Length: 414
Image (cartoon, rainbow, N blue to C red; front, side):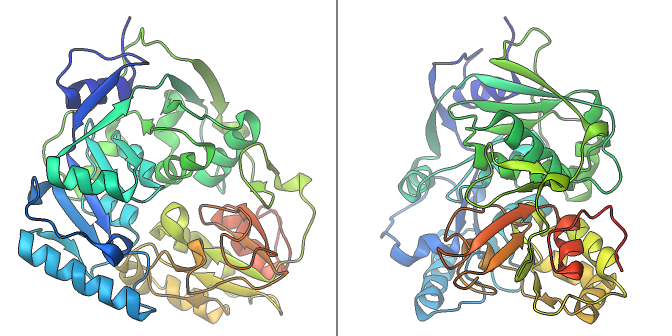
């Protein structure tokens, strides 16, 4: 019996010929990523395993909104200097860690990447094995270069057809989350003939969001589109993990991309809680948000600017757009997206995790309704525990900001 893509990655990283569900493996980590929040209570380390396999990215609280965050930044900078960590992305080169990982090819096909952020599975878009871990585990990896995993069974999503214009990775994810629910203690693998029609930004949206169905790993097959993306971002050598034709899967699920339509997750969770936008009431909204590691990419800003250009945000609605990195912000400036969004009445912020985790740059108030293209919609995630958070694609959020209520982005806007 053959192996899945994730099984092949874990076998290579653990020095084994093969692994199977139920095995416990000790793996060498190819890239370990630290974020700014880790440095709030930082231990006194004597040495680290490999500074070249370590990256530090300032992302959650940037620029520092509190004194505590400012002091954590000071600790991070000193740590990078003392231990020779060259892959340090400080304010000005910063961004949400998963975007910076992508822009700098820190996640490579066939490799293992670790980070404290729960959406680390985002790097699975690049055929990597990536999973969020707790701070003690990441510090242990920093010192030893290793971690361990229990090999889980894999669910395969076979993509067929072509993704229609106006339908994004968020819609695909919300469809699968609404249809099949949680994937606890399972890996997810995406491939099939339809994969070629899915752009890299949409693959990353899907991979990122798989944390919300509790998947262990979420990994896409490697193809030419992925190779071109990595080449454009300066990737070094790598060896893709190609699933065997006789790999054993816990389930095989087919998604016809051509049949996809805009989806919305209702407040509280996304798993088993998403419906086509046509089946969701046209709920009035107070705040619309486009951003996060899932949907703050350059393509998201392009989509929002295209929909909102020449129009105005509805009275009583706040539209907040947060680029996923400083690089995305600079590109969006050059391409005119920031101008178009600002002219429409949107606020374009600095790159940060900010509003997505309810910290700064757009916290939602008591009793308000927010429609977000970020990563989570559970109670209290973006601010008040009495606020309602709906989740949708960038296109749906941008269209709804214009109308003032949850709107199908395929409908003509006045």
